[in-house]
Image (spheres, rainbow, N blue to C red):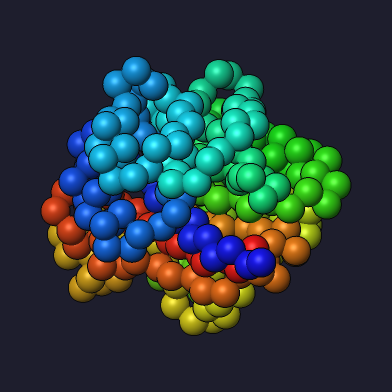
Length: 265
């Protein structure tokens, strides 16, 4: 028997402030599971009732006051797995669960890394690289476990993942050192990049646009910072992948948009 499951991921940039558009997305897209990043709320203040009213009764949280925070919201039963400290400082940037069918689902919010792409001048950039290295070591140990890794990776790896490869080569999120670090992470488990599996490069594919632009649609200076990576067996079960670009124009939007993949598992 094959079950069709849809899993979405979204850096919401404050779940309480943007609960209206989260509810709209859940109503329109109807994912079975939604992974949120940058929830910016402690677990005790998370708006559980709003999700429960919509049928999402299985919720796993890893929150933090005013900063970071991740959550997995599900219509399907979840077995809580872990909260890994890849930042090595206690920040709430990861939560992982298992589904009843054995799929491991890992939700991550990689640090942005500050503004200067130099470890010596900018400790935040070094923390980002170290975070990716810890994820790489973890990936080496998965040993064939069916896994889906989703979230805001804060790296746009391909030239076609940004509005201008040339102009962003020295801008954090698209520098060669970050791209190389992400490449090592991908190789560590043979991860399949589902976004580019369904929308092959060099086709345009963005998930983030800065708030600094008065009209994000006019100059379209986007970057693909949000990703879904699957182990090869899970990737083989992926049947559809959607990018919800229209959400960037909704009332009080996040600077990120949701992405969603359907699986026949």
